[in-house]
Amino acid sequence: MAEPLRSVVILGGGSAGWLVAGVLAAEWGARGQGSVQVTVVESPDTPAIGVGEGTWPSMRATLHRIGLDETELVRACDAAFKQGSSFQGWVDGSAADRYLHPFTLPTGADDADVAAAWLHDAPAQPFAHSVCVQPALCDAGLGPKQVATPAWGAVLNYGYHFDAVKLGLLLRRHATQVLGVRHVADTVTAVRSHDNGDIAALTTAAHGDIAGELFIDCSGMASVLLGGHFGVPLVRARGVLFNDRALAVQVAHATPDAPVACTTVATAHREGWTWDIALPERRGVGLVYSSAHTTDEAAEQALQAHLSRSAAGDLITTPRRIGFEPGWRERFWHRNCVAVGLASGFIEPLEASALALVELSAAMIRDELPASRDEMALVARRFNESFQYRWARIVDFLKLHYALGRRDDADYWREHREPRTLPDSLAEWLQLWQHRAPSRSDLYRHDEVFPVASYQYVLYGMGFRPRQARTPAAAGLQAARTRLQDNERLARRLMGGLPRHRELLQHIRQHGMPAAR
Ligand SMILES: Cc1cc2nc3c(=O)[nH]c(=O)nc-3n(C[C@H](O)[C@H](O)[C@H](O)COP(=O)(O)OP(=O)(O)OC[C@H]3O[C@@H](n4cnc5c(N)ncnc54)[C@H](O)[C@@H]3O)c2cc1C
Image (cartoon, rainbow, N blue to C red; front, side, top):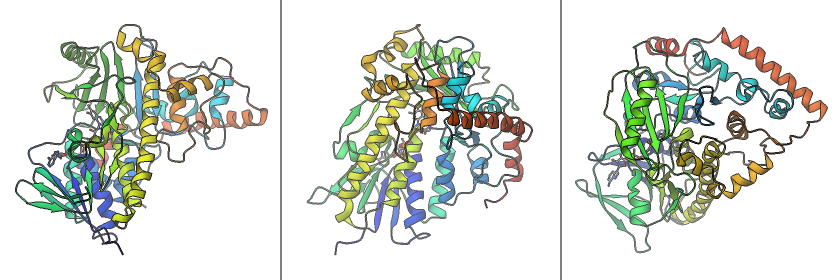
């Protein structure tokens, strides 16, 4: 019989490394099945990237499952609740140009085609507000739960905004002190191989060789193992999505009690777009741009102009430039090595899918952890297929935000919507959606990264309307109209029952949350 897999070595202690360590150790480590030792090797000389402060709702289940305390997360990481993304200026740049992509699905979306009913009855009304309660509640600055809602529970679906560096420290503490993860603070200087080409051990500067059976490359953009050692190439995405630089900064709120925004605000500018993430103590802001279209100087000016317009307080950090090559690795799992996080690829932060991919990767490695080396090729093939599909869908979905715009103030925007830059899959869907709403027959996997509703929120939020929508059948139309009325009633009821976001966070920081049921 083949030797059982007993040791997993993770290279890298950024958000990816510590999340994967926590997920694997909770299931397979001393606190779980007890059969696998998880080790994280993290260089004290190379800091984690320190950005990546917006998550999806999936992060709640991930952190809950590894045994973190949600109150501790809010207190230790300066966390706030993220209820979706707001888009400003993406269609034509006018003052009224804004829409929301909320995390909550349309009311009744499971049993009625509310998008078809909205298209038939009220296509001039904002889509997200018509079908979902969350946009109106976000506009009103309300939190997604009550002070009496138990930890990890929600009235409205939510993820987080948090301080990425503080999250890394919290995850490290939890993984090492509670879950039994071994931490080696050292730099990997070489890779030692078996005769068959598998990795045998990572050689470190001061701790010798760290041996293992499975190696997880979470070394960030350096991709030390998958890209560097094995030479697995990058599938480049810049022909579709042009951005390759970001300028990130932390700023104070205008006043200490300024409202804490409920969404990541993504604002389009001539030079690119800015993210704006509000935490209780500060904001994290950054401009994302394409070096082929915008100079670094113009990007700095655009960021400064955005900060002035959005009433930012003092700078807490100086703007930091981050370069990236948009793309993903041709394979993610090769031999006994799998890459997760930036080591596996990065496109751009629009819609914040990177940490969600880390969670999905960690969950699949946990669930399909090969019992021995003999099983690894099979699991690797399944993993690669799954994540190649996911990266392609992420590209489709991000490109949708650019493909539908009409901004005419820069080549950056005009070129982004040229048909030659559209993936075939997206071009095909845009043709189909001229006659019907996006549906499960387009995105049929049970674990799609972006559900059908997300495509509807962006498509209709950006003003896309079918040239010739089909008339829904009378019974279906009636059922969906009832759902739209339910949505209005529910929004009115919740408006009076949810606290303001900052007050909710303040309460949790002082008194904690009721324990999870
Ligand atoms: C501008 C920008 C904005 C982003 N915004 C978002 C967002 O809003 N939401 C989201 O989900 N994601 C976002 N991301 C992505 C997110 O930041 C990353 O997915 C996340 O932080 C995980 O990074 P990582 O752990 O893979 O890499 P890193 O944080 O870079 O960590 C790499 C680790 O590897 C270690 N290491 C490297 N080489 C060696 C070596 N030789 N020996 C030992 N250790 C080594 C380093 O010490 C470090 O610990 C953003 C990314 C960028 C660039």
